[in-house]
Every structure is written in C-alpha cells, then in structure tokens.
Image (cartoon, rainbow, N blue to C red; front, side, top):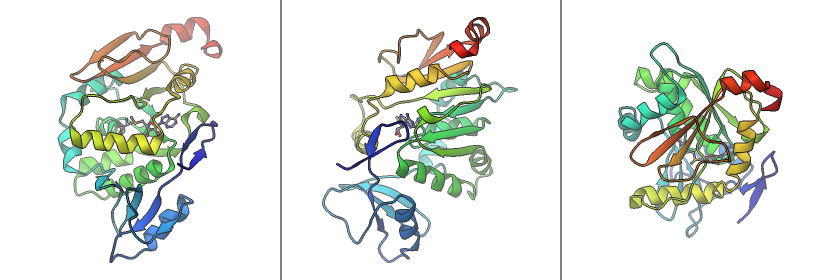
Length: 267
Ligand SMILES: C[S@@+](CC[C@H](N)C(=O)[O-])C[C@H]1O[C@@H](n2cnc3c(N)ncnc32)[C@H](O)[C@@H]1O
C-alpha cells in the first residue's frame, strides 16, 4: 500500500484513485483527483478502494461497500435525536446558555462534529487523511444548501483543517475533542464493513498516544476523549470524570486549576 507522510512525520495511506460516476460529467472527478494529487481511473478494478465522484455526490467504495460522509442523511437525522448526542454534549460542556468552541482533532466522518455543531458549538474539524478532509468539505458544502434550516445552520458552524492535528496550536478558549480509532470487536456487519474501510483509509491511528501527548500540551481547560466502553484510558493521566453510554465512554479532563497553579507553559 502506498503511503504519504503527514506534516507531523506520520505515514498514512495515499489517497485512493478517483472514478467518475458513469454517464456523468467527469469534470468534478478530475478536479477531485487534482486536489488530492491522485489518479483518475476509468473503471473499477477488483477490490481497490476508490473515491467515486458524480455531479452532486461523492463516496468511497471498495468491494461493494459504499461509505458516504453526509450531514443531511436519514442516519444523521436519526442520530440528532439519539441519547449518545446528549452524552457528547454534556461531556463537552454544552448547556442552554453555553456553547463552547470545539477543536475536533480526529475529524473522521464528521459525525460527532456535526452533532456538536447542531447543538450550537463552533467546531473545527482537523483531519489528516486527505480524502476524508475533502469529503468533509464536500459534506459541509452540501449541508449548507440543505432543505432543513437546522442542518444549514450547523454547517455554518463547521470548518475543516486538513492536516495532522499535532501540527496545530489550539486556542485556549476551546474544548479539545479526540476520538482516535480503536480496534472494534462487537459490531453489526454493515458497521464492521465501514469500520474496516476507515481502518484501511487511515492506517488505524497507531500513534494515538502521540496525539494524546500533543493534546495534553495544549493550553485548553477541557479535553474530551471518546473510547469504547471498556477500553483503557488514553495516556497516563486520570480523567476528572467519565460519562458512559451503552457502548462508548467519554473521558473528560478538566484542567482549570492545574493551568492556574502550574502555568500554561508547563502543561
Ligand atoms: C474514529 S475516526 C473519528 C470519527 C469521528 N469522531 C466521527 O464522528 O466521524 C478517527 C479519525 O481521526 C483521524 N486522526 C487520527 N489521528 C489524527 C491526527 N493526529 N491528526 C488528524 N487526524 C487524525 C483519522 O484519520 C480518522 O479519520
């Protein structure tokens, strides 16, 4: 598998080739291939992972599995009402009169970021896999012309930063959110396929401890880490508290007192 180096010196898989949807103008596909510095291919080849691009839509495809990044899909509309959203909002510190800015250092498919934007937070999504950053920007553009006003409003609060988070300096008035990949065990077959594709695209986030070290060095008062329910904590620090759902847990690190007493330079 070909890889590219991120600015932080980590190898991630190179962007997939781009395939234009049959019968549609390939202009957008050409533009996508150019933006991602990858090749345009004429047809599907075996089990190769591809970015399929049409006039108004784009998705990842491999071996019959399609993965889309969309904030206006039925799944996302359903998710907006889900209990886990409430937990994520509480972990980040969302209140009726408080909508913190969030730096999502592991943008991925943007689902958690969209939930937070939908709750009223301004969210920066940092994503180092170029094709995911490209799809996130496409999904935000599509959401910004949604027929649902709330989806349009949330899209306005989302901004993508392509690149390795470990190269970013996070503003101190921000909540830092991390959700690095973790090997999944008990999942429905469809979700497993999607997780496998994400694993293939990202390389698996083996350097999550490095991401944690970077996060801990940022001058923020609150860090939230999403983990599978029974997974060990990320890094050596103990969370201030955790919020657990059915399958995931949010570890919350509140550091106001530490920042006040030891000074930001030492954190
Ligand atoms: C489990 S996914 C995140 C899913 C996301 N929370 C969502 O709701 O869709 C982890 C993502 O973090 C990205 N990632 C991991 N380490 C990163 C880093 N140091 N900088 C930027 N992105 C990173 C991976 O490329 C992957 O897309």
